[in-house]
Image (cartoon, rainbow, N blue to C red):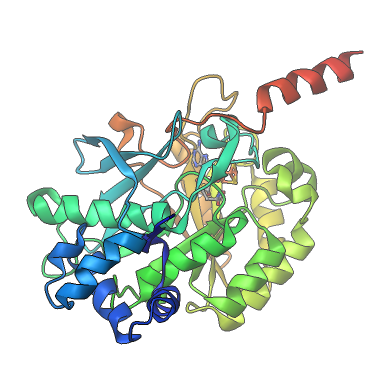
Length: 371
Ligand code: SAH
Ligand code: SF4
């Protein structure tokens, strides 16, 4: 018989599971606390469950986190864990300590099908969605590792070590909607990690219908990877723009702000030398977002081999930020962390067995175009 993995369940899922085996719903809350607050990985540890239940549970259920590969620590305190998620497939999760918070950057898919021009994950192609257990398993492992070794955790004293989670690792979270929502629901649940909705951020390249579903189902903080102020350029940099162009994306952002836990959207904007970092782009950006409550987060491009792009010079990034601020917008520039362990945005590589056959597709398209 197939045993269910209890790490796949959020609270409603676990309640349904216990009901299905004839147990009281309150067991779900007890077990959730054991799993996520105390990091239990064995039913025998759950001492407040009846002995008979502890014996029965392993027959129908298991606790199966992703397999932990190696860990790397950066000189700036950033830590990165590699997780094995099946043969030839690995994803990465990164912890970034800062003075006032500790942020875990979580992956949602093995690879990504959206193929943004400047993204190393996108260049690897797509294999599969992570399960809810594999998404929450990243927080589960990081929590354990940081509790064991809190000295290097963060300056965030007295607070929980992981105070914020961002779904900005590998993959497009809104194309793995149900599993992402189940994992996020555990991040928020007081019986699990108890984070506030404002401290869990989903980053999306702009999957408009899923943004609306998220708003209705589980609104958390939202970051939208904008990267270009007009459709012609965004079609090139973020190809999913051809499906959900800027007009639709901006309308979805406006709808989201109404129900979201924050009264603004964060627009991420990767600064690519000579591509999207000129004065005309600032002007177009201001016009595009003129009636949207938003903040800008400028990300210095993190290079990887054969990307074909260069990072904008620091002076240009500074000027770009000032031009936005002069027009009354809030603009921050992301500090690049964990450079020495390739842990920065868009550098997470893991290992992807490409089921999308991107390379072949690319060669085919080139051949057809050349013919
Ligand atoms: N798929 C989602 C979330 C993962 S990517 C999304 O695209 O939003 C997280 C962020 O890193 C996105 O804003 C993405 O555009 C950015 N990013 C990707 N590659 C990058 C690179 N090489 N340098 C800097 N930022 C990058
Ligand atoms: Fe996928 Fe995000 Fe990378 Fe684009 S930037 S390829 S959506 S992970």
